[in-house]
Image (cartoon, rainbow, N blue to C red; front, side):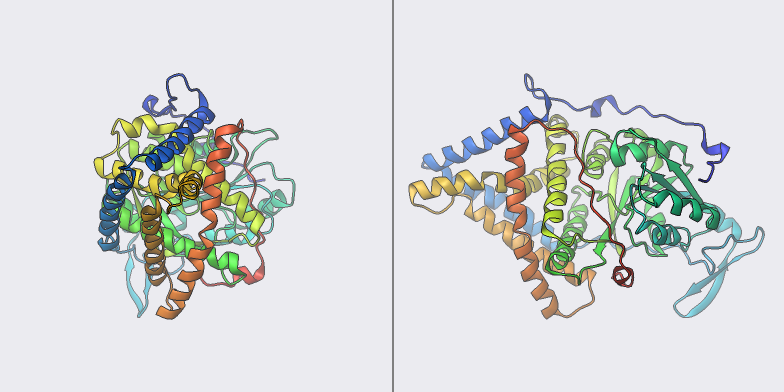
Length: 485
């Protein structure tokens, strides 16, 4: 295993902001009690609205407010793309001191970049937490170590989280091939999961910017040239790359996930444009070092560290931007059971952040536009599926349509329009193909209703311990040949 250089061995610890510690409702300790109280309130309000004569008018008013916000989102123009840094001719080779680095463009060679220019580019540290990833770790390391960025201005850190397969052996071989590669092996019993692995290594890195990737990531060679200039904006604390499903042609499940990623990309851009919440997605996330230090690193008490860090960054006054092109690829899960486990983890982690930070949200720690954006997202993504059961039951008992039908119709319309526009932005294909993918994608998205409704109920009644179900990465040759959009 490669030795970590002495200059990296001094650990630097940062104390999280006291204001960002998790609060509880008075008299209600832990997420389970808060989830139960929230569920009871939502179900109770739904029943009351069915029983009072003015209940339907409350829903009409709510629908009007959400519709106004939805129209603003749909009509917003995304932020203009920022010009990338110039390309290096030999990105995987160190540029000799005192010699200019040749630059290529689509039309051929152009003026070289002088050493003083690229020597001032931000230093970037790329982190990967890997556990039993022998099928995918080698192509990932090879790609990360041959980026179109000066080799002396970035390094790659792989945290082997006590793998029991051949991951450690493969990494040992790779360290002899790539001088930029640093490997840290965690001992048996190390806690914190992915967050713990990242927290163990990031203080020892020297990057001004820190990038995080999953072990199955397919990284484009020019990504750093597009990412780094975005951080020239002093308020930007993090950037999330668009995610693309590399095995999208495998089956209906993976096709649905590609449409889902397009939908997410579209709304990320639109919400950021309106001053709303930009969100991190784990794979392909970049964080400014000073911002990460201010937030105290990654939270080891949550199952979705990226969504938790998203809120901590916004509470600390940082903005999160989104990069549409190039995209980072990842494997979509190919079986229904694996999809169920993964989406339950995502749903529960997303819900936890509202339970954990409700007080800071209510105290308007965020800007008004962000607070309203979070409230609207919660209503559509979590509130609506949670009230679906009592709403439907009361509708049957009273022989009427579900009370929240107008809000549900708005949510469906947003999903259809957003997915179609997202597919048009992320994929070069005909209108008809995008239309067909949108139809299937929205049928596929119905699984979220079951995931959210059962998750909120389960979280309210069952004692919860942090449990992370690993997604198996196949790393097949077929997947590796798929081009990213």
